[in-house]
Length: 352
Ligand SMILES: *Cc1c(COP(=O)(O)O)cnc(C)c1O
Image (cartoon, rainbow, N blue to C red; front, side, top):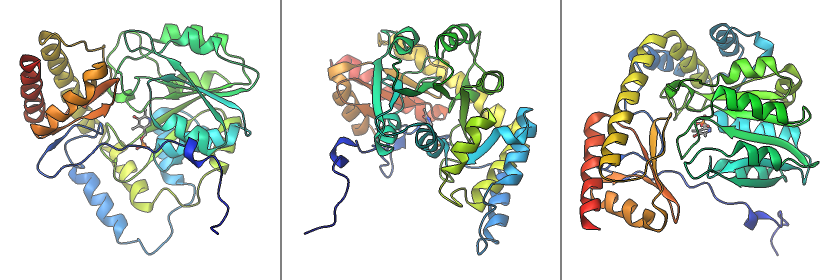
């Protein structure tokens, strides 16, 4: 006999992380290629000397610094162990068992997992043909059981961002009892005409929160820290679901140092955006379909060829992220890494 565990474990998909292969270029996890800035590395090293002490349980200094940086009151901000932890806290805070969580699909692969973990029911709404979220279909899918909608913008893994005008029309259609989470993990990479600022939306509406992270543009994926901005009526319940002390003292110190190094990090982000245009243009010249991307990756909707393309890249020592039967996501690295990927892609085209 073994102990009783949940009977629905088989229904919870496993999170598949991007692979790491020694000696290969890793373009599988939307990380930044460069390590932390020297000022950030110093802050981490200093925090390490105090590792015998528990961290500040509320991450108060970081929350205050974020509030300043964003121009919002500190009571509207909470920090978490990566924004994925905040996604999970949010589902736990708003859903009772059997309640529905809606999201576009394909989108962030954690959504169906964390919905199930919280005994909620994931509802996946297919994207439009161009890889963008189908906001009309998402709004139409709201039922009496719906408690939460994730809007991932820019959308991982397909790339397009929702415009501010479209988001406004969408939010006007959603009942105020339903929470809308704007997952803005790639916010810093957006260069579109009418960009959404989730923090502004969250401060203006009673049922909207913005989720952002230090893992992507700020380059701290290994330290695990993100934040949520929203109305106090949601921030307090979300903070209540936190695993105590889950934002480490190293993560708190590093995040504060990142905010202080804003300009240097913005320059890095601009370089990624330039490379993103170059990579997408090259792929289009190879006659690949590539949706518009406002993030630090491109999406190749290869369908049944996705696995072949992914294996081909791996043979050329480039690790991409394959969603079998659907497509391949390729993170934007530094120019040499991107060249290595493009060379592999070019050969795939000529082979088929
Ligand atoms: C990477 C990512 C996150 C969060 O990452 P953390 O490392 O947990 O902060 C959240 N949402 C999307 C869509 C992402 O791609």
